[in-house]
Length: 206
Image 1 (spheres, rainbow, N blue to C red):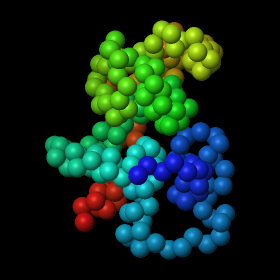
Image 2: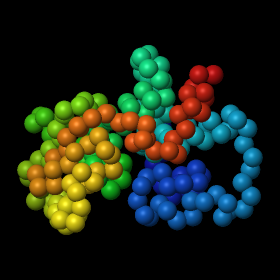
Image 3: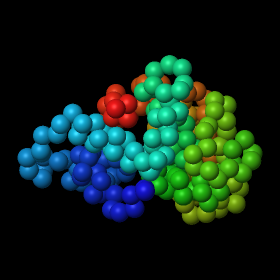
């Protein structure tokens, strides 16, 4: 089952900010709670798996399914695993800064705020491909949430390159039309360094 309790509790458990927003930065250092218990290798693998799973907001069943797909693909299993996770529709929306958190981004996808290549898609796990264009529905541009986003993008792009609007180098943002283009594929440098794919793979391969 997917965890639905306080998100700050999860950040404290894993020792770092899992969700990317300022509100989850407080008290995430486990050292502040006193001496941290020494974990076995299995315990470390479990914690790394749990942290990554929670970062993407997935249930155990969903997360394991991505591992099963990754081992059937050609190439490095760990890279395949993260590639599949990063290319989820909800995660692309989040990486493009169209959602404050992965949870908010998933809700926006579920509520059909976006089109993919001009068609309605409301499945958060939908796998994006290079060349896909995500656009905000016209009626949603009048909502308070996206009006605020549009203003932020405009102010940011006046001082910075439009290429820096996204958290990911493989996404291109059009701040005027509020569109996201998948212009490439995630590379190792784009992956969160806190996600230890080696230990996750070791955990599942036992």
